[in-house]
Image (tube, rainbow, N blue to C red; front, side, top):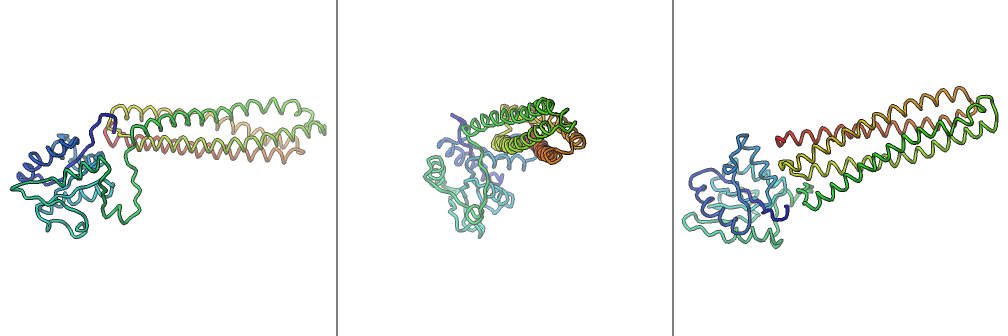
Length: 332
């Protein structure tokens, strides 16, 4: 939650006249008095699929209140969604007989509709905010479910800073590839003519230049892989932790998608430069057979670099697709 933002409570119950009256006169006022922003599906007023509204509201809620009175199958399904998403859930009912067997081990608040007393609900709702009440359900209690909660504003800011830093580091890694490609001809040039004539000193120097290049390139490839993985993982965590229904978060996601597209364009330029230089090494090995082993080591370094760049490019495209799908899912 952002500073000053109220915690959200979402209420699941059948839309009968009796239960609607209980919601409006008892449940909603009580939760609002504790400090919650309270909604039921019919409060949303969206002109879209109601199940979409319900699932999105469950996902965004800090607390779920589920009235199981009447064993309504829709409410039962929605409780299952809330449990699967690890949302703290309070069960209400007029009759304990309406609680399914699988949930009988969990506390349910029974109330009399003729004289409603929801003191236990107040205690549970307040206890969630204070941390004094623990919640469980059959999914989280018996299965090792790892559902990422919405990221806090502090974590979002941390991820934004990390994404910017990781993106700059990845650009630096790609620029290093370009610089090395620009430096290689200058390093090879002074010895190349002599090596072609068979001059032993020139051959030794050319062999050393190529081997040094191969070693340095392999180190750079390992660094590039780390920075590439770190950048994409950070951006993905940022997108998954953001509420993209908020305009500012959706705009941020679109900017990130643009940055990842720019990264793909840079990677394409890197590939072009690397392939051209690799072909030159093939020619060099034919011209100066004495350095064929060193030229082969340099070609292996190029192949490793091209493979790392190809993986990075595929990861970038996957991330672009993920961001686009998440934006489309919320209509942003």
